[in-house]
Amino acid sequence: MRKQDYLIQLIQSLSPAEKRYLKIYSSRQPGAKRYMKLYDLLEKEDSYDATVLSRKLKTDTKRLAHEKEYLQQVLLRALRSYEQDTNPRIALEHRYMEADMLSNRGLKDFALSHIDKAYEKILKYEQHGTFINAFTLRQRLVQNRTDPSPAFGSYELYKQNMEQLNEIMELEFLYKELIPLLVNRNDKEGMKAIAQKGPLLKKPEELLSARALAIYYTMHIAITTIVYGLGKAVEYAVQLIATYEDNPFLIQINPIAYLYSYQRLALSLSFEESDRALQSLDKALSIADHKAFPLSEKVLNQFRFDALLQKLNLLNGLYRYDKSIDVAREILHYELDITQEYKRTTVTFLYAVALLFTGRVEKALVPLREILKGNKKTRLDVQLKAMQLELLVQYDLGNYALIPYQVQSIKNWVKRKELQAESCAVYLKWMLSISSAAATGDPKNELMAFSKDVKAGKIKIEPEIINLRYWLDEKIKG
Image (cartoon, rainbow, N blue to C red):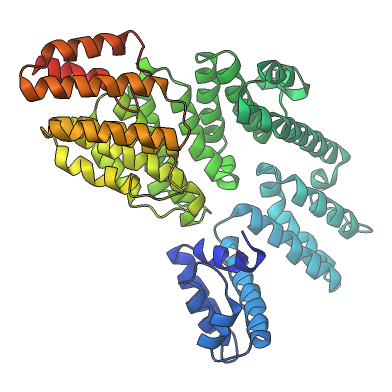
């Protein structure tokens, strides 16, 4: 994203509650508040265009740059103030800064009392950065004074916190090392090597902090799933959720990781345990909808979208197409960043599949047309599957004479895009054969032969994409 658009991105991340708070906060500020007129304009913009904006505000670009900078400052101050009431990390950091301010005014006893009120939470919430600052400040404040809480300033406490911080940082660096391996998923030996390093070699009970334990389980889930398969990963995922729920402060300081821990469990479960996976996703969605987290609505919507997409894939795999329709409709109402549009295309396709397999054949054409309308950003793989699915739709509509023309169109498109689509050619051959047989009589023999090729693996279309077996079985039974 362009640097000029950072402010627009920030404004678009605001929740309705944050927007209301900004209006109240700005009303307390003196002056004409021209910057709020800029805010009202930027709420509706996709990108920052100084020339257009200055014309709308009847000002010059130099003055506009000043207003933009001031708006950014006010917005960040308002968010700091807002999050102080909702985000414990920020609240504790503010408590330290207030104590530091009192100390600088010479109010040493007041400063010591002020920081000690927060000290237990600093320790409980494992806020090691704030702890270092608070510990250093306390050391200065208790010079030539009687320390009211000597345990807070002990070297043993300092040493314990540094050991916890070192362990967390070591795990964070290992996680950073693991991420590129997770992207390509091929270097299993590299993943095994990481699992044999530092804190990852320890038993869970040997770790020094809950934050370290959460990172430990998260990494082991990822490594185990790819290297060793499901099974042990489920156990790690269950322990990860328990770690959050046994230490509620972890949920407060990293709520999005807590929500995704349920998704990790769902991903770790085998197909035979799909119902349990669905329950895990529903639990996470319920928590996201009913608990107050220090998260923007945009972040929460991204989580909901990801969890619902996973749920949609599971429902399609279980042939629960009626429920798939409801989930797909719910997903498609979310507004997402442009970078996530490829996921929306997948959902649109799965929505068409569910409509077809629940007998709403004509309605299935609407989402298919949306995918095939020529958008260059649409994924080619989904476009091809949409074309293949439309052949099934036209067959179910009885438009047998149309299918040969569509088949030739698909062949031309595949050639033009220079795609490797050998299994597609077998599929197209069978669609021609069964449509020809249906137009002249009973296509049952051709459908059975088609089904035999599918079961033999000659047509490699994943069942969660287009469930050909399901469609063919229904036709053969009918």
